[in-house]
Length: 511
Ligand code: HEM
Ligand SMILES: *[C@@H]1O[C@H](CO)[C@@H](O)[C@H](O)[C@H]1NC(C)=O
Ligand SMILES: *[C@@H]1O[C@H](CO)[C@@H](O)[C@H](O)[C@H]1NC(C)=O
Image 1 (cartoon, protein in one colour):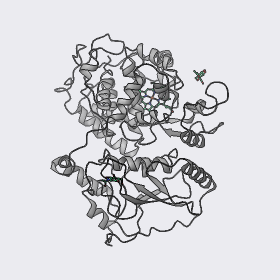
Image 2 (cartoon, helix red, strand yellow):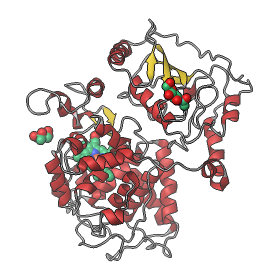
Image 3 (tube, helix red, strand yellow):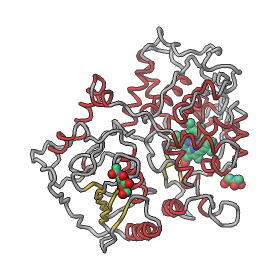
């Protein structure tokens, strides 16, 4: 039975922040092989408290496994979300995607859209094994897939939703269904609308569900056509933004490199937020199917995208974030994760930082890439940034001016960006000259708590995209203050230690 329908409902709600009830009076209808009319009224027989007595710990167990799995591999959240989508689009959300080849089954795992692509089965197996220990033969695999998709969204910083439960697992799979029902990355807007319509999903559902591409990655083979021969004339897709196009070419060469990956949302690939929609507005959607949401001119899609653009997550209030019981527990965790050593050396505020020089020369690839970035920067610098170009390609000193209308209006700070020898495979080291802007994510030693500078870095990012993220982080700041753990962190940060040596915990990446 299918209630994946609830995802668009809530994603829409969260991403676009308009009243779903009003905007979509028909939101109660269902999705999949088991008939219409499920959803908020739960007339399918599914309901959120389905395991209330038989397995009350079900969601907790799912979340515990997910937390560990995502900590091991941040991409897992994306893989599990996609797994649910690919399950639901074939025979409904019935766990048919989990079935392996056998005498009677032709596994969906071997379908074009899934083969060498779909991931996360081992995490589903792990959840299932744990649930079998606690409540044997109670929780269906279809519900596990749905719970894992919701949990992964939540753990990536995205919205939660009420999830009706009680799905039963299919004993059949459809290889052919998987090949024909799951849309291809080079789909036209018409293809997409048709395929979604077949599942009872409309245009708004298409846009909001595509928002799942706010996390995760895609392989070169899924977007190569756009770079080299979009329309059979050996030309790139002209809707691709230029600098993004050059970045993608360096990851995805004309021949080979098919399995190289690039983030679907280059600004925040591990965070469930609305940057995916902003990037589309800027011509930086990764797949054709992403960009055509805008360029396909399908009626109010543009309007929907604009709403996504305007939406910003509600900021947690200070007390929620830094005080209160929950915050305390997040807190101690933060402290453990943020510190690696217990160095006693005290950092003096305001003292110039000398990070250790990087002795090795840049690789040839890094050199070429940086030269290209520098040229592009000179032609088209990101608004609010000034780089006084010198002869040191490996270390850029950039003036950052707070955007008009924000807390940092007219204030200028210096950002230093240093590149490792194997840039762009490895993230640059970026920090403010102390004390840096007063911001809940910027420590007084200039270190910046921003995921793309560390775990979420991807070679498709550039100095410009880093700058844009930093400025947007500044612009969305609710208050001029240091992180609550500033003193502890700075005190324990040996003078000269790189922020890249810190293990950051992005407990609060919405500011
Ligand atoms: C609109 C039609 C869609 C198309 C054409 C499409 C296509 C793709 C492609 C080609 C990839 C990369 C696969 C690879 O490189 O192996 C991908 C990844 C992904 N898709 Fe979609 N997708 C669509 C809709 C959705 C929906 C509705 C969701 C969920 C709400 C979703 C969630 C994801 C996620 C999270 C990833 C990253 C997976 C990972 O990193 O492991 N997609 N998609
Ligand atoms: C999409 O890609 C497939 C496989 O590479 C190809 O056969 C098809 O013609 C492409 N469709 C479009 C619209 O470019
Ligand atoms: C920033 O500078 C502009 C132009 O000089 C001025 O009009 C504006 O009031 C300044 N804003 C603040 C917050 O000082």
